[in-house]
Image 1: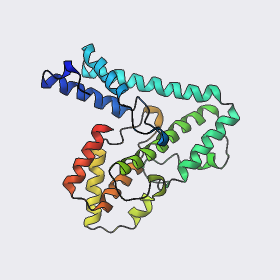
Image 2: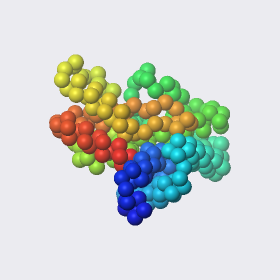
Image 3: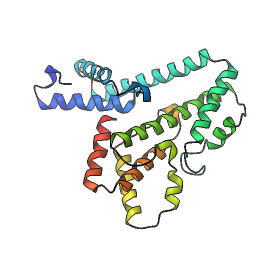
Image 4: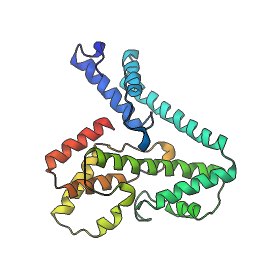
Amino acid sequence: MRHKGLMKEKAPWTRYKDIIVMIRRAHIFYSPVRNQCYCYTKPSEYLAIAFYESGRSIAQIASDIERLVSLRNEKDRATISGLASPADFADIVAEEARQYLRSFPGNDAFRGNSQHGWFRALAGGQATNRDHLEVLYAELLYRNELTRIATRCKVFLQLRIEDAHLFDTWTWRQEQEPDKQWDRFVKIREAIHDASVFGHPAPNQGFFFEKPTEYLAIAFVKSGRPMEEVLAEIEMLAINS
């Protein structure tokens, strides 16, 4: 999208691009599910133009974006809480936990996976109070959605690897030797993380989920693509995430 008022000089256009990247990385607008085709970019572009024309500082815009994300998350929780009975809500969270645990999320002791014990308990039918369920539900939604995004990334880049929910990154790691392939994996993983391809969790989403980053790094390793091409594709994902 090329807005006339933004194309007159380089600095304003750069400011607009910075704003739209902030909006996209915050995931204010939901990513499409599998049957919804491509991401509809107009809402993000519209909001970016509105922020641009407001004259607010980048720091203020960043704060406003955080507030929008917080409001969206509160609305999501309120919708689930308001529509589901306690028993139904527990079933919803349990099914989300089962879906997550079937997706090879990594070793329970791996960093960021401290809630795995509770996820397994929920999947097995153990009860907990409503507030705790809502906390766990937010974390599960974040992790399951990031897994789906990782699959969309590999499809977009035409990387030959199983979908993210079918691939066991933990087992792959254990099978590796300290060789050039491992070094390549580490470098690519760091590049994906530094580019913030998968963003950062909101305050209510728990720890950062490592698997999508590692999955995408493994996919690149398996592809055999030159490092220059890999880094360019990571940058492209970061811009469009």
